[in-house]
Amino acid sequence: MGLLEELTKETNVLPESLTSLSTEEMENRVREIKRQLGKKLFIPGHHYQKDEVIQFADAVGDSLQLAQLSAENKEAEFIVFCGVHFMAETADILTEDHQVVILPDMRAGCSMADMADIYQTEKAWGKLMEMFGDSIIPLTYVNSTAAIKSFVGKNGGATVTSSNAHKMVEWALGEKQRILFLPDQHLGRNTAADLGVSLSEMAVWDPIRNELIYDGDMEEVKVILWKGHCSVHENFTVKNIEDIRENHPDMKIIVHPECRREVVENSDLNGSTKYIIEMIEGSPSGSAFAIGTEMNLVKRLIKDHPDKQIVSLNPYMCPCLTMNRIDLPHLLWSLEKIMEQNPENIIKVDADVSKNAIFALERMLARA
Image (tube, rainbow, N blue to C red):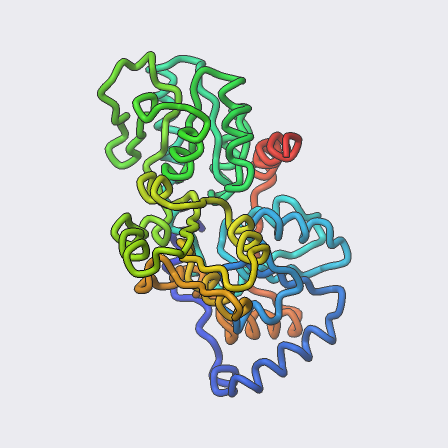
C-alpha cells in the first residue's frame, strides 16, 4: 500500500475503552507501560510534537538526530516514533532488523515530503538528463520519503539537513556542474544564495507540469530547485516582519531557512531548528525574539524561557497539522498494542530502497 493510501484510509479508530479515559488516566497508563517495557521501548519525539506527547519522549530532537539515536539504542525492541512518516522511515532504514519502528498515527505525514514522489522524480530526471546530460547530482532534504532518498543514493547524491545544507551543497557543486535539490525549493534557494549562487543561476522544476521554469541561458543553470515547500514555513511573510519592526523595534527576528527567500533576507538570523533553540537558550535574560517556525516549538520556547520576550513571527500561525496527528490517545493506543503483542502501524522500508537510501545518508554523514 502506498503512503497516500495509508494516509487517507480509515485507520486508527481508537477503542471507546481508551477514548473514555481521562487525561490523567491515559498519562498514568503510558507511564506504567513505559515502566513495564523498560529498555525494550524507546520513544523519540520531534521538536514540533505536542507537549502532551513530548512529555513522554526519551529523546527530543530533529528527524535525523532521532533516527540516529534510535539506531544507537540497540536494546530497544520497539521504537514508537512521535513525528511523521518520513522520520519513521529513516529510523527503520538505520535500525537493525530485530527493531520494530511504529508510527502512532499513520495520518502523520509531511506535505513537503509528499510534494516529490518517486514517479515524478524519475520522470523529471529523465528529462533533465536529456537537457543537461550527466552534469547533475541530486540532493534531497531529509524531509523526504525513503523512495526519494533511495533515488538520490542510487544516482550518486546525498541527503542534507537544514544544519549542514551549506556544506552539502558546496560539496555537490564540487562534484558536478549542477545540482537538483529536492523537495524544498526554499531551503535550496536560501542555501545556494548564501554560497554565492545568483538567483539568475537557479531554475525551478515544476513536477505537476513536468517542465523546467527558467527563461535564461540554460548553460548558466547551476541549481535546479524542486517546486516543493513546507506549508508552515511558507506562510511567514515580509508583512509579518514589517509588523514586528514597527511594534517591537528592539526584537530580533529569527527564522527557519524553509521560509521564502525574501523572509530570510529581511530577518536578522536564520537557521535550523537546532540553531534557533540554541540561539534562544544562549541569549541573555531580557532578550527579545520573534521566531518564524512551527508553533508548538515556539510555545515551548516561550514556556521554557520566561525571562525572555518571545513571540511567533506570525501570531495567527497554526501548528503543523500533520505533526499534530499524534496525540496522547494515539500514543497510548500504540503502546497498548505492543503490550497485547499485536503492534500496529509498523513502518517497514523495502530492503532495496533502504540500501540506496543508506548510500545517500552515509555520503552526508561522511562529510558532517
